[in-house]
Length: 182
Image 1 (spheres, rainbow, N blue to C red):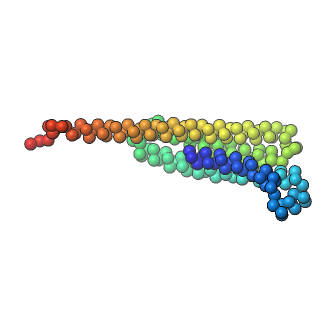
Image 2 (cartoon, one colour):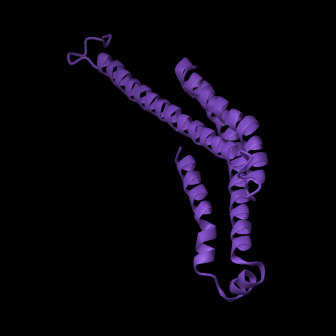
Image 3 (cartoon, one colour):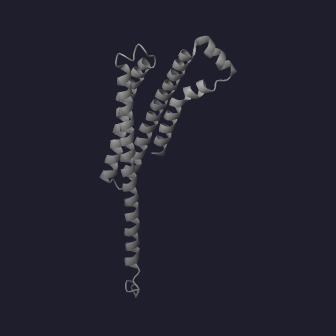
C-alpha cells in the first residue's frame, strides 16, 4: 500500500517535470527552445513525461500482480485458510488485472493520441484519456481501501490469536496446581 502511494507521488512529479525544465532551462536547452520554439519543446516534454508515467504504471502493475499472487499464497498457508482474507486479496488482484488488461493498454493508446493537440483535443480523445486516468485513480483508490480492510482484518486476527493463546496458557496454570498428577 505504501508503494502505491509512492507511485502516485512519482506520477504527480512526472506531470510537473516539463514545467520545471521550461521555467529554468540550462544553456543548451535554451538553444533548443530557440531553435524549435517554446510550444514545440513544451509539447515534446509533456509527451515524454506522459510516456514515462504510462511505463511506470505498466511496470507497477506487473509488480502488483506478482505481489498479489505471493500475498495470496501467504494468506492461504499462514491464516488457516480464512475466507475473508483470501477474498480481499482476490479483489485486490482482480482490480490489478483489470487495470493491466483493460485500462492501461487503452490509456497508452488514447494517451499517445491525446499527447499532441490541438488536432486531437476537439475529437474527444482528450476526454477519453482523462476518463481513463480517472478510472485508473478510482481502481487505485479501491485497492487502497480493500488493502486497508485486509490489513485491519489481519491485525485483528493476530491480536485475537494472541488473546486466545494467553487464555490457554492461563487455563493450564492453576494456582493450586491441581492439574499435576501426584
